[in-house]
Length: 388
Ligand code: ADP
Figure 1 (cartoon, rainbow, N blue to C red):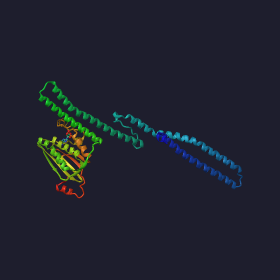
Figure 2: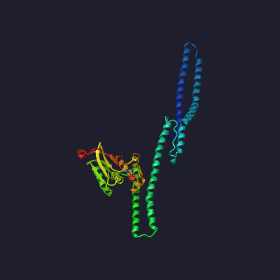
Figure 3: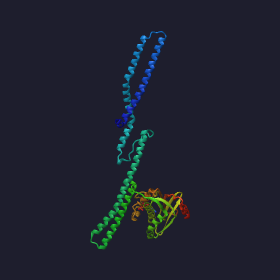
Figure 4: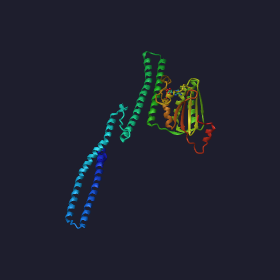
């Protein structure tokens, strides 16, 4: 039966069609033969009952019946052959659109992913198949475009620090310099190398994240405590800009997450708030439980983010203001990392405009279930919680 499973659909359909048609004809011929035979013998009996001598008629009827049987049996191979030929033609007609579809699909290569298969009738089976294949092409096209953009953006980002390092080296070598000047040049080069290393690390982490090869160690953690830790480690940056980092974190807000990964998400958002809001402004960081969720919100008094940029700022390499962000050292990956870090921990990150200008970034995570019999709920309510 191996040949059967490897035979073409056309051949299998033909064989099935011929078999079914032949069986039906055999049954039909047998039934006809039995009916005719019955009729002949009934007539003979009738004649015998009316006193007619049927001895010769008996032989005649037998000969006629044999003739009918020979015609019926002899015609069978012809019928099978005709059924096969008819089946083959029908199968060919039915399958022709699939052949057309296959040759159209074969023409769509990686650089012609914008092409689509023609869908003459989207209501029939072939039309539905073509629509599904077209959807797959559309998804592939968008993944390819994303990949190309990512590669181009990554190369562009890597080129800038490399060009700076080269420039510093060339200027340094143009004439003899004092040891202090060489030290200065090497220091600047190392700064750029640091920037490159950070960028490559981030890119690697994003691609490991995409491939799902980062192993998370998720466990219960106190979101308020983690947020306080992050803000105190970034306080020095806010101080340099004379900003006030106001932290209001409810106690006992427990979530299940990977500490290091979630820490990075909060740090990137707070770091952005410091970078993108004016000197001597206030940044409000709040941690609140509510409706089975925990949220960290970071509100700044910066220039805010235009509605058309709000979704895109989480895209890789997206910067609202290319020049200013690059000067501040950002490659446009901070929020992409933050979104990945929040989502792998089962949460969501979003941004909305602040009531008095600026932006509010909000990270929302599912609350961890309190251990049975714990005083968790009291601790939360005691600290005056409520979704901010
Ligand atoms: P970058 O490394 O450039 O900071 P991010 O992914 O962290 O990259 O942010 C993407 C862009 O979103 C930034 O370049 C900036 O234009 C904008 N952005 C992020 N956070 C803020 C904020 N708090 N206020 C205004 N703009 C912001």
